[in-house]
Figure 1 (tube, rainbow, N blue to C red):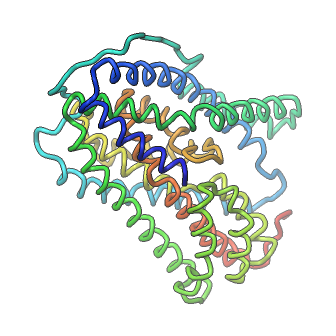
Figure 2 (figure 1 turned 60 degrees about the vertical axis):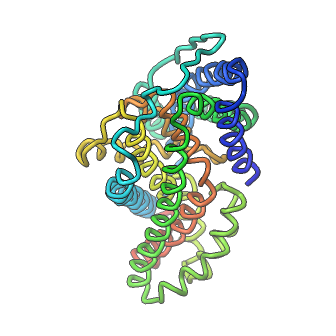
Figure 3 (figure 1 turned 180 degrees about the vertical axis):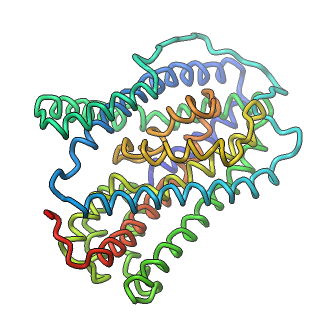
Length: 386
């Protein structure tokens, strides 16, 4: 939660500096923003490569139908959540922006950073994604312990980079973005949309949670209200931890309180903690539409244009590290390669996402409990080794 407060402070202080501070102070922030942005975009393909490779290679190899059923339900849940979020945001967000709103159209002071730095990534995002699937599936098929160890160690190095450097410095990066917008005269319109999109995301989280447990309740012959009530400890724990992985012990107990078979719960909950991020997908898709509305240089996509992005997002969520903001970091590459997001648009996405990260995580883990129920009812006597 401290990260959220720091992020909000970065937005407020950055806006204040852009509006009232001398130009050289704003330029200092812009210089940091440019240098940090280069490091961020250099890291994203490596994150996707190592995390997806390690994730695929680490999936249980002898779990039979139970593995396929769990992953299938988790992926379908994530995709449907993203589609609903797109339609809701497409209806609501455009009403918030005036016809002349365009954060890319500068109406104030144009400031440049003191230093321009260019650090090109080793390879592109789609190349990283393709390599990840080739090596991940190859490791799983051949049992190569050396490549598995290398992918795990690469994942650990990138996670340390995220935890120790990138995530702690994000508030300063966001401060630079908002200082630039404040100097340009577009910050107030952006902040107005921020508040509404955050409320929309949280509302959609609960629409998703209720829908999932209504379906699970029908399958299990239990009251959805009771099922949700039993999952509330996991929901509120996730609000504090901002990590699905850190909430696993509580999520497990909540799932068992809903009469999920212990073997099924022990298998599905840890698996879904890293493969099922419906709440995060809802927020990313909602924020994507909001940024496109604000950013006049980006065309708002039709459903058939956004669908490939949502389908790929469900896969890339496998690369989401179990740290605050990990999901949006994994999605940054797709935003640039598939939707044409530039640095300013991606910085806005990060700010929007991070402001509600705890709620998205809470939605993720609560949905994990519903998936455990659905898997349990589909195979009440399932054996994780079958």
